[in-house]
View 1 (cartoon, rainbow, N blue to C red):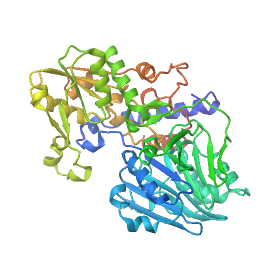
View 2: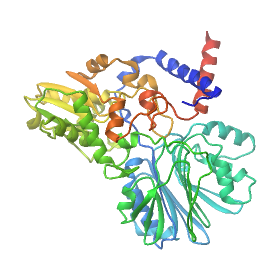
View 3: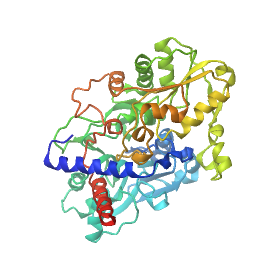
View 4: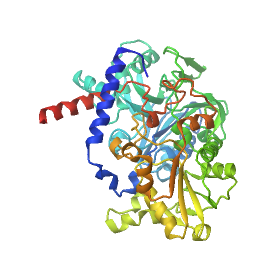
Amino acid sequence: MNPDPKHGREETARSQIWDIGAARSAAAMQDDDLDGDTLREECGVFGIFGHPEAAAVTALGLHALQHRGQEATGIVTYDGARFHSERRLGLVGDNFSDAATIERLSGSSSVGHVRYSTTGETILRNVQPLFAELDGGGFAVAHNGNLTNGMSLRRQLVRAGALCQSTSDTEVILHLVAHSRRNRFIDRFIEALRQLEGAYAFVCLTNKKLIGARDPLGIRPLVLGELDGRYILASETCALDIIGARFVRDVENGEIVVISEDGVESLKPFPPQRARPCVFEYIYFARPDSVVHGRNVYEVRKRFGGELAREAPADVDVIVPVPDSGVPAAIGFAQACGVPYELGIIRNHYVGRTFIQPTQTIRELGVRMKHSANRGAVAGKRIVLVDDSIVRGTTSVKIVQMMRDAGAREVHFRIASPPIMFPDYYGIDTPEREKLLAATHSLEEMRRYIGADSLAFLSVDGIYRAIGEERRDPVRPQFTDHCFTGEYPTALTDIVGEATKQLSLLAEAG
């Protein structure tokens, strides 16, 4: 935690936030909305400079990043004279697969975005990349992350006369750049970044440059690649693989990468800090075939399973993954304990969230539309279910019951991450703390709630061992792991302000 006077006030406010949440009704745990019982992906960004088929390449890159956001997508290109923008609700393949759309996006430089809305409604005006004509030329920006002082900055900008066109925190960066009085664009951009708190990976396009930037702690990922001598920025290496590009390196925490006709320039305008990347990239968000900070995600997830098997063994006949996110950890668990691995649950990949209608009957069948028991693999057997996380627990309840209905003799549950105790404010859409099962229930209460014969989570230290890092400093760990520990690595200006307002209202009501 930050050793400054301001930190003490922040810690008090955080405790107040959680106390307010704990006082709310625990009945929220009974909410049967399966789509709420998961961690929502953040967003994915992509950019390429100087390629003759920039829009087509960007569409392919975004397709590889689709797992990071499925609500909306957009591409902005520049052809040397004009910017062109196509922003749509829905999936990349549904919006950028036809030649006519790609032809409208003329130009050799491009930025793109896939979105899951953690701030701002899912409406077209919030779809990124956002674009504005500024003094000196156009500016398009795509953002992965969340600004923890975005609302505060927005209020200040509106009071100063800014006209906001969206409800997204990303729009703040456009206004901050526009308000800067620095002469060079890059200096205006840096001045804007210095005012931001929270997590960000920006990919921006101007008349002459493609710019990438990571927050000083490197919470959200960003990589640099190269294709036919042209440089690329992307959230993950899987976006490079799909287009046959070469991985060059990770963009460092606090680094700004400026790509132009002169090549790649690296700027580091912030005081050096130890990187604190988000550990959930390894647990859940990154695609298994991506390499994050030099580590293959699939191999790390298998090691999570291996550590889990050593920490919480079980005398069972079969290891069963909860697909798809639990598969690598289940493989690692099975290899470590020498118990057979079986696909005891089959996932239906052709059911989307929009298929589940808001009626109680269909909602009760929701998990069966997404997952089906493979009776032959589990009937009469003692099984361990392996999943990557438990959020609210409602899906876990149904999965356990599904296995019992399929004839499993014993159903044990193992989670390849620590209990999620605290909400995220850096781009992951987690429920409020009172809706997190682990925040309101003991381990035994959680076990009874989901109906398992036993329940265990991977420890925080186990996470670090699997990744290959030591928790050298328990107060400032190597990764951003606040969902497990409550150790938020940055100021939470908007959140603390909201807690203060809530406490004031409660006091008045009392």
